[in-house]
Image (cartoon, rainbow, N blue to C red; front, side, top):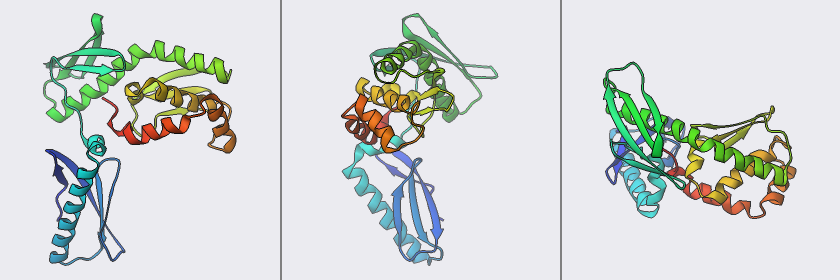
Length: 243
């Protein structure tokens, strides 16, 4: 049996071991952690050699790209913490109570009160805090964000938008439905303004082209000629964004 995780710089990163028809070891990074691919049948001595090889590989990757590992580190929240989202700073109050569900409320001066279920585990508390913060902050940003979407639409596309909303998603930065609904990840709120504009323009272009054809990219380039720089920024820094 292999360990379920490897610890790097004090953080436990999950390791998924896949046995398949192959003759060598292979390691890669996935969305939730590392993936170690091994031959289906290995002697005990070979399993130990595989794990030693993997540890060396993982430590070398961490040494070369320390910022890359932000995607695997969940943030922790404590009473009295602050969260900086764009130009807005929120202070957080956390109360553990005998209640059936976690709740949150935004008070004046951007103070967010989180009321968490006392009986939940520390891991559940942290996950709930992140989800609630995402929801409350997104609601606070939505009017301003919607105005920017409408402004960019008037400037470059002039299409009908049915709705604009935030979603607490990690798999994509935005989406556009065939009915004209635009959804954006709350993680985007942590990105620079010009990067946010790129994602908005990307989704607005889908109101005309519901694909990634040459015509679609031509629409994006017409509105933002240097859009590839914004894509590059997201690929290099996006993993560290979010609550």
